[in-house]
Amino acid sequence: MSGNNRDRANRDRARAKRVVQEQLAKERRRRVTLWTSLGVVVLLVVVGLIGWGVAANQESDKTAGLTTPSVAVDEGTAFAVGTGPVKIDIYEDFICPACGQFETGAASTIDQLVAANKVTVQYHPIAILDRASSTEYSTRSAAAAAAAAQGGKFAEYHKALFANQPEEGGAGLDDAKLIELGRSVGLTDAAFADAVNNGTYKAWATKVTDTAAARGVNSTPTVLVGGKALESPTPQALMAAVGAAGA
Amino acid sequence: METGQSARTRIGWLWVSTAARLGLAAVWLVAGGLKVGDLAASGRAVNAYRLFPYDVAKVIGAAQPFLEIALGLLLLAGLAVRLSAGISAGLLVIFIAGIISAWARGLQIDCGCFSTGGELGAGQSPQYAWDLLRDAGFLLLAGILLWRPRTRYSIDGVLMGEQ
Image (cartoon, rainbow over all chains, first blue to last red; front, side, top):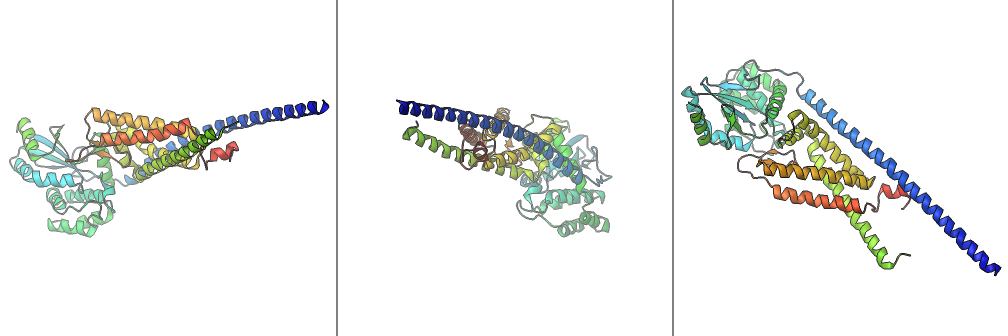
């Protein structure tokens, strides 16, 4: 009888101990969940802010020492070819294959329109494909085009760059080649070569790209006639739009 | 008392959740890692959805890769798994909504899920259906973790005193 009582007392004690342990474990899980959750929320907020800070830093690094070519038009973000009444805006990246195709197809149409004094073409050399080359060719070529514009040879140099367009995924053209192309269109002075070698207009290329993005230009080529974007940038669409704009 | 059957089910789910956790961690680490190198491009990818003013898109584009990497590391370590899975699910729902909205508006863009995205050139067509299917798959992983957040080799397990 007394043995039975002792057994029962032992069982009760064991049960009570288990209940207490379960309570403690539960309490511990609650505490761990609370603190880890708080920690994670704080961590994610801090990490997001770090991202913002890093981006702002990168932007100010890339636009430090901004030199805007004095010949640039449209808030210093484009180079004008021709003086006709209908305005055409062309946003291009010199490594973008679709831009190369557009140039191949539409260059003679554009030349005719310019020669007939029907249009003014504003070229915006933007750099959205820096990752498509190992040397940030997009930025370097846009900067070189700015140097060429400053030397009075934008239209010629622009054509030379597309005629020698490098493949995506490679190293792009090096600075020596960019200078050589300049020489081939008559940019023989030291000012052009120095601007390419020193990357004088690289910050400007970044600014032009940012301005374009702020205007909603997210792809290349983007072609606007009289401020209205062509849905599909082909020579035919370009001619039609220029005709509709009254030239 | 736990029966043999339910113990086996429990252990089975433990491993399913562990695989889901590591899979989702890899998704976030790769997605964030591919974008973190060019934050300006990441901002332009957000801008291509035309849902936010450019200045807002830039901030989102800058913060997003860092958040993705942080979530990836949390899941990899197994810290606050249920919360991390919940935030992952929330982000994925936002991404899916963004892709549907781009599709509905007929935008020709790369979703920027695993790249710095942006608009597509002539002759390229968007892969919205495939993007949506893929994001739904990731959402399923997050769902598994929300439902069964206990996994092997997790810091949560150590802190809870289970392992």
